[in-house]
Figure 1 (cartoon, rainbow, N blue to C red):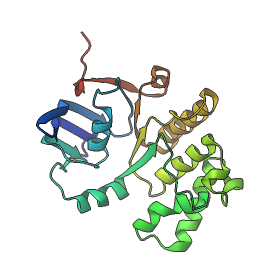
Figure 2 (cartoon, rainbow, N blue to C red):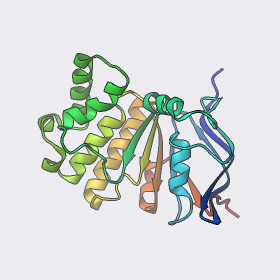
Figure 3 (cartoon, one colour):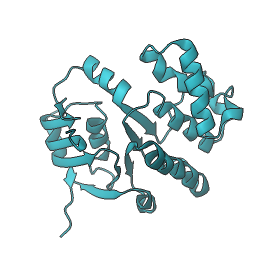
Length: 228
C-alpha cells in the first residue's frame, strides 16, 4: 500500500553560516503532508517560511534531519538529482509570478515541458489546454507586460501544472494582487485541488486565505508552533 504522506520533514534543521555567526533558520521542523491535501503554512517574517519552502520544494537540503518525498529520503541528493525531482513532481507558483518577459503566455507555459523533453507538438497542445483551463485562451500570444497581475498569476498556475506534478507549492500566491483578483486565483487553486486531486502547499501571512485549505500549520522560530 502506498504511503499516505507525500512529503515528510523529520527534525529538519537548516543552519546558515553568516561570517562568524550561525543563523538557525529551521530548528527541528517536523511536518507531514498527506497526498491530496491542501495545507496552509503561516508564520511571521523571519519564522523560517522561505527556508521551509526551499526544503519542501527540493530547492535545498537540510543541515540535519530527513526529508522524505514519496517515502524516499532526498535529504542528501545532488543538485542535478533534486532538479529532476522538481521538474517531475513539484510545480511552483510565486508571489512575483516569475514569468519570462520575452516569452508569450503560451511559451511560458510550454517552458517546463521543454526541460522534460516533451515533443514540441505535445507541448503546444498541452499549453493551449491549460490556458483554456485558467480562462486565458484569448491571451495565449500576449507577453507578461500585456497582461494584468491576475492574468499573469493564472499563466503562472498553468505553467506550474504543465508537467502534471503531484505537488503544487504556492509561495504567497496572492501577495501582489488586489483582494478581488486574489480571490479568483485562490478559487482556481481550490478547483485544482478538488478536481485534479493535487496536493497544494500554500505559504502565506494572510489568515483570510486559510479558509481555502484543509489544514493550517503555524511556523514560528523555525518550527511548527503547537497549540496549547
